[in-house]
Image (cartoon, rainbow over all chains, first blue to last red; front, side, top):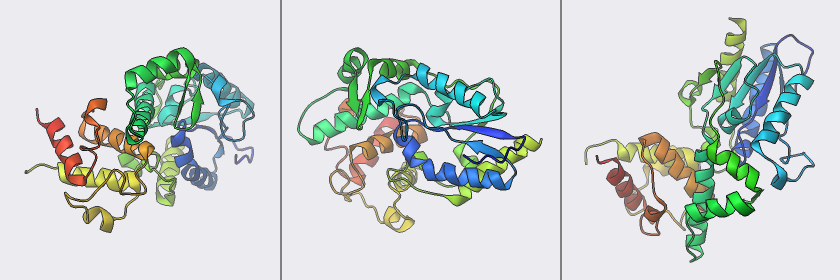
Amino acid sequence: MIDRARSFRLLIVPPLLEEMNRTRRFLMGTMRALDGHGIDSFLPDLPGTNESLQPFVSQSLHGWRMAMVRAARHFAATHVLALRGGALIFPNVLPGWVVEPVSGASLLRQLLRAAVIAAREAGRHEDSAALLETGRTEGIVLAGYDFGPALIAGLDSARPLDEGQREIRQSELGGAALWLRSEPGDDPAQAARLAAIIAAGIAA
Amino acid sequence: MNDNSDAGLRSVLGDVLGLGPVRTAALTAESPLLGALPELDSMAIATLLAGIEDRFGVMFDDAELTGETLASYGSLLALVRGKRRP
């Protein structure tokens, strides 16, 4: 977090799961660039991820939404920036920006598909529909994350919550989407562009 | 075939795997993918397929994602072209 008690205070709701790791450095760069524009910013860990002491298996989209509402209040956020799956859980009463929002079903499909492909490479047969059913009833480990049934069910039906926030497309940031990169990458030019869009929006 | 599938697929591969323009341009129909590129683990393949679905507005079934269709750049390109054909 970069807090110099300024009047514009941006809560950043990161992408979910693996995409969060892939965009971490990009978001750190964005926060530094925002600092240069005179904007404070806060990037809280979602419960069950990074430094959080809670187990991942007991998380749900509802719990993450509540945590982001609490974070917005705690940091006295005036604006919000949500990226990708962050759009499923951000406090949409705040004005702000949503970068390439994605449905929960689309994130889930990717995880299930990775499991199906990994099984195939190991000579086993799995199918997405059966894995999803297991996930919804008992929970399931996908891409190293221990999903409880609540999070699977939540993702399966969640739609982006944006309501009047400005949508930012990848093409406005230039370059390749960092959440797609299978290895975490960095792109200072994209971070600078995102910060400039936000600063211009706040000034307007 | 005169469509933009080839250029689009190269660009998605480059973006997802972080291949530089040289490696991306050097891909040929015979270039092996699954099991050959160290960057291409199962999560990367799933990410790649999601990137292709986004780029071309297509949707893959599990059943289409076999060792054969993912074996080489050429077989993946054929899968994409097959999907895009109305």
